Amino acid sequence: MSLLSIIVPCYNEEETVELFYNAAEKVHQQLAMDFEYIFVNDGSKDKTLIQLRNLAKKHSNVRYLSFSRNFGKEAALYAGLKAAQGDLITVMDADLQDPPELLPEMIQAIELEGYDCVGTRRTTREGEPPIRSFFAKMFYRIVNRIGEVEMVDGARDYRLMTRQMVDAILELSEYNRFSKGLFSWVGYKTKYISFENRERVAGETSWSFWKLFKYSIDGIINFSETPLNIASFIGAFSCIGAGLAMIFIIIKTLIFKDPTSGWPSLVTIILFMGGLQLLCIGIIGKYIGKIFLETKKRPIYIVQETEKTRRD
Image: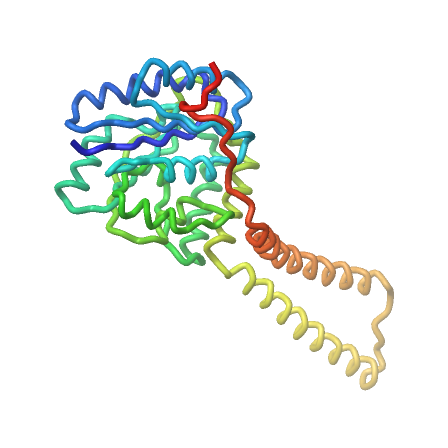
């Protein structure tokens, strides 16, 4: 009998982990395959770890990894993929915004239709703040226009993958991770299933607008060199513009005897040029910072406890 590994990153999800397990087990009863659950506690500050310990005691198919601190969802996904032993592997959120009842259709698409990956995407963003929806749509437009890989608008991390695809993803052991881009970068035949947006069953999201904004910037930088090209174009344009302006002022002063007067215009130009330089330096610095983190070769995460080393 084949094995399905379900990876569930958790950060302050004490109210949802058991609800998630019960909902997923209802789907398990419909399928002729074994399930293993891999919960990854990403340095939660509530009682998530206690709930995972209790769940692992009650159910033999529950495993968990607990980080020494919060390393972020990307690290949790990577840790879960490394720990997964299944023939098929899926990634789901503990808040049940990813419907477990889609699993039979996803499994069928891989086993009968020949797909390597079945992803999910939301058809609507109901319940989400309008400004967040606007910036999310803008992100996908920008990254698909300038990026190396295509990312589907509304795509979730919730997807079912074959063992071969997961092994390919694990070969990408980079420190700066953006899973949506990595899933697309490795290729493989992928199908998307659409569903309507769902609210959390309990608790509150830890993703603020600012965190999502920084995450989107990382996604653009990790999969596109366009920001660097923009910085180069800005520098070249500014240099050419300044040269033309200099020639214009010299001709105007020497031939037409009309010197440029006043320092406000000079100060404005200096501030404008200084702002452009800082913008370009900031873009370059962002890439250099990524290189700096990669060269340190620090571990992506540190596991403090598992179900085998739990502290009763």
